[in-house]
Image 1: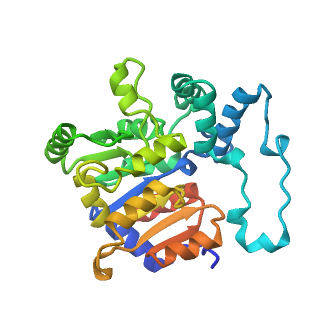
Image 2 (image 1 turned 120 degrees about the horizontal axis):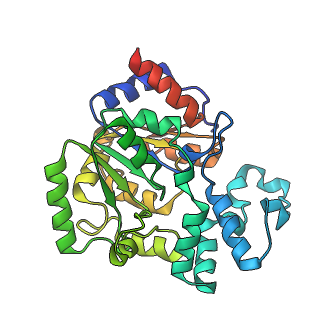
Image 3 (image 1 turned 90 degrees about the vertical axis):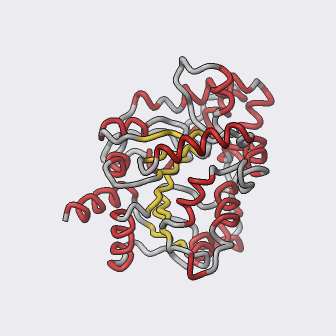
Length: 314
């Protein structure tokens, strides 16, 4: 099924009511940092992958077509999801990069490519920073959401997901800290983060970006384990809220594992309807997630941000 291009009034009513009741959890993906209105945004995952390939090959690459030309048979027309090439697979490319060089070089290169200090938070993040939310989840490594919250004067605590999960001591410390912090906003960086330059080496490695295939596999082994993966208080917000996926790929294995472990196991009458906004989503994924109670809209996240602000003001 093709994703609808206009959010229905009924769904707007649900989204706005859940936001006002602090029962909406935005999930932010790389798409929220894409450029708009003539402004350049942060590079996409595919662009980051090509930058890493330049390190491996010594060739300057402007676009994927400079590396390879792909011809797709007509019989795959309705299965375009299967006709992808590995050059755009950031997790696979990062694994090659790390093996050819080393992890410290990979982390340094990512910081260079994703230079968030040269960019301002996009309109969507500015809007979200002023909403009565209890939790925002982001798969992005950059600090644009933190800067948007600071600019809005919104108090928040950042939770950085360790690749290998939490041990018993750190889980208890985190639960106690989050329980004391509520109901203020929690910013959960599910794929880790770039810490400040003055952060100690142990903390920087513990919260390093989950980027290579090996990183994802390591995280997936603990993601749905209570007390090791997603912190309990954050998991509670997942199951009691409407999830709002913004520029976030619902193909990610880590989130699909969490969704199956926390939400799909709930009785149907306890599951909240959720929404995803993506540009030109694949019909296969639109249909798959519709069956799971997630409605995907073919809507630009920056346009959504403007309409959301207008409707909330109204």
